[in-house]
Image: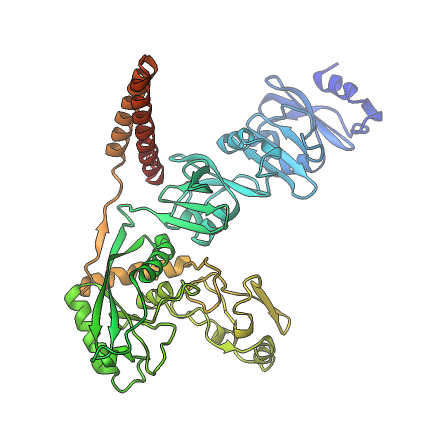
Length: 529
């Protein structure tokens, strides 16, 4: 009798699910033994014992090299997963999990450990969808799962990324982009009664407002990819005689600047405005509509001179050409200014859109259509789909965008089918004309161009400030000092007898804890550990 024959008998022998033997026991890699049966195999090794393996899990194990591979020998029989649906086998250095919706995939090392710490197949991630796979840089590794992914590098360890955070990170080219690899477990933070979920990465963070599902990317400065502060000066324009002043107040201009900073945070660009609405009396500037104006050369030259003097991006809020004020704005990367109108709280995306033009971004769309019928006719008539991609000569990651006026405000519509061909709408891209629903954003390629233009303009006239990287050793030293002070203060409070002393010390503890949390947040955002 052998360990394999004992195991076979325990499993019911020929009447069990394995069925009849297909041959005798034979030698297996590294001093083991094996025997094949109609519906599976039993493998034995002196360090593991004898265990059965069958079905798609066995197929996957054998495809990866079986007992001679990095997985090693089985250390369990095929076992029901805790959800009662999936199945798994553990091996010496890995596991293979199977589910009818996913098939069989291996997971091992620190990725498997993190996955199991999160709850394994019962975790929010679900079952593996891939084997552990090397990243393109040859450094990192990952497993995709049903509802998220786990990434590992020697420098960061293994961390999960899922949901809207993973979606936005992937849009920004994942680990190959400006944010790098996940560097910590996602966290939940409550600010002003609103819950935020935050994903931390090597070079920034992605946070989701759980009330609105708004997504904000925060890139922090690094030696290789610094952040930039870009100065703005803002003018409220009237005619030469003071008539037709633009109806904008400081609060309105600030709302627009705040929205621009939300959008451009992903690029590591922040616009700095001193909060002063400067007054400019200039009829030609006040009635600018664009390069078709006969007074365009003189007015544009005047604004460019102001920009050169201020060494800032000039934002002019003008009234418009006629007796009533106009909406919208315009700019281009050949101008040193952005022309805007009165503040419209329903059009917060206008200033970041125009600043996008200012820093080198065309529209995502190449043609406008009044309705779906008109757009369908364009396709049926054999017109070029490439012509629908308005930024194809500069931006490589925004697809053809058939802008359809009748759907522009239908924020629930994110795709259309025209002449049998599906098109994803650039609904969320800040350089589209779609109603962004407050979620306008930049693509990875757009970010690259913006950063290039910021540097180019800084060499010519713009007083851009380069934000230095976070000094992690200094910051962590500061944090350690604060934590020591906090521990001492807590001990002093707990030892206090007089109620007045306890109240005073409790207040001091609260203040110091808040300071510790702020520094911890900066350290987490800077990838300091």
